[in-house]
Image 1 (cartoon, helix red, strand yellow):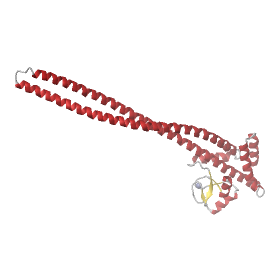
Image 2 (tube, rainbow, N blue to C red; image 1 turned 135 degrees about the vertical axis):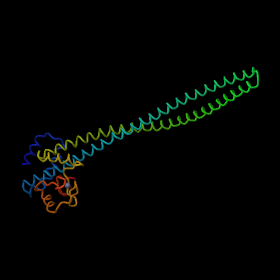
Image 3 (cartoon, protein in one colour; image 1 turned 30 degrees about the vertical axis):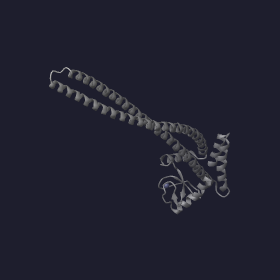
Image 4 (cartoon, rainbow, N blue to C red; image 1 turned 120 degrees about the vertical axis):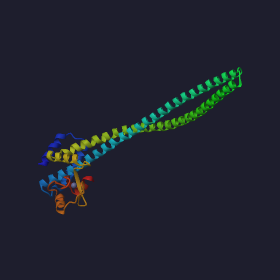
Length: 286
Ligand SMILES: [Zn+2]
């Protein structure tokens, strides 16, 4: 039954490329290993198991590529976010510097005004009628001098802040330049990897599709369903140390024996994954 479907699919897919041909002969080789010693039905089951397990290996590789490719754009995104953050910080510093410049200007004007006031008061002192008026003007002059001193103190503070902000801008700018450089590198890496993995993925997808022709629709649907529901995308697992390779539940000896017999497709009682024995799995992985 399965043999017929295999032959059909083979002819359906010809002409086949080299890789495809290799895969097919690879599976046939595995199948023919036992064909002389076992019954036809057992061959088909074993063939199905090998095809299923091979398909799982290929599909897992595709999953892996997609995960890797999924993470790289995140790294680029992180860098882009950081760059936006740095640019915003620099813009804020520039705004601060502008504000400080305005404040310095204001204080300088204040000093000018106070100086003019003082000049006027001193002139007035020359024309006073009594010492009380003179004292009053002297107090005004003293007050304006204090204003000047205070303004000068503020200018000094603002100038200090200004130079600090300039230093911070220079530091942020340096980091920004580095990040921009990193981003360029990351982006080109990403482009390379996407390009490369897309080719690899396509080759694997072709392999996967090819292998699917070895598996009857009912079984393939089950495989896809289990894979979709399994957290790690594993629908076919091997028995490792008397336990299911998917959920690690123990497998009773009789069931383990049944699995090794390749007489029927056996699923894990706990997680529903299709089980193959270690020997079959390692023969595929060779
Ligand atoms: Zn299980």
